[in-house]
Image (cartoon, rainbow, N blue to C red):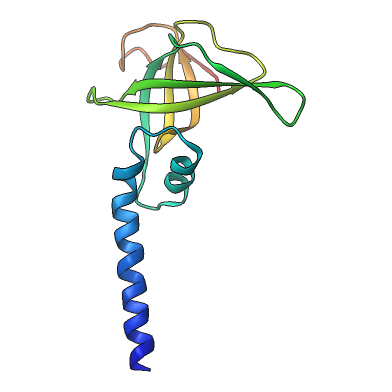
Length: 132
């Protein structure tokens, strides 16, 4: 019984350490492995970021016969701190220099809206369209 308790405590310490250090390791990494770690980590919160689609997307075919457009962008939070994000749009690419307000967990976007005015973050209030 005592060995079981020691092993359980050791496992909890290891899992806690991994959850606390994973955001430091995955920060600004737009890879599939980093996205999975951020998605399952309960300590990584969803935050709002602002970005411009000045970069050219990479295109891939999706399972529905259409195309996915992947943007690796530098986005900024309300405090002006930069963060690399992976934004995926299906079927139609975004226009160049489109301004976005994105909800992201880690570096992977969950939802987003198009902002019509390039002033971040004040302009992304009521002047937005659903995007992602």
